[in-house]
Image (cartoon, rainbow, N blue to C red; front, top):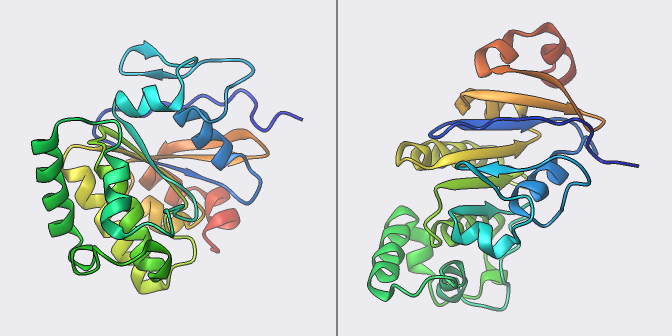
Length: 221
């Protein structure tokens, strides 16, 4: 069975756009299609005017697309610093890499404190910081985030979404796949809702928050 059917979405430069839906709705498959780990049977993926449908993931990363994957997916046996340098793997501009490393360390002081610690020994919130910082080391213009609140305590979820807003204010376009509809819509410009692989709702964040169908199904109202 196809996981997605007739899904059409647009993410404009400088926006935060969220993709919402329940389990098995097709959210992660959509994200994987954007980054190139899943190829669509039909249709195409366009980025900054180019048809990138047949590009592999590494070429997409080189073009400015990065991902903070579901469940963080850090390298547990590598140190914090080694994880961060993996984010810059495709780059060879050492001076700029060092500058970006200092920048993400300033953004996430906990990582600076623990730069020699193995990633797998860190807490869930710290690993999420590391996953975000690792993605930033590729200097993305378009950042994809798959379930960034998964497994985090409520206070850390709030911090996570504040960080997403701060990143967006630096000029990074952000696409967030998320189950926490209320938090995602609180920071997004626009949103889409998937159900059984189809887009069933789309609009501005405010219009989705006020939509009765959205309120019943996803906001507990």
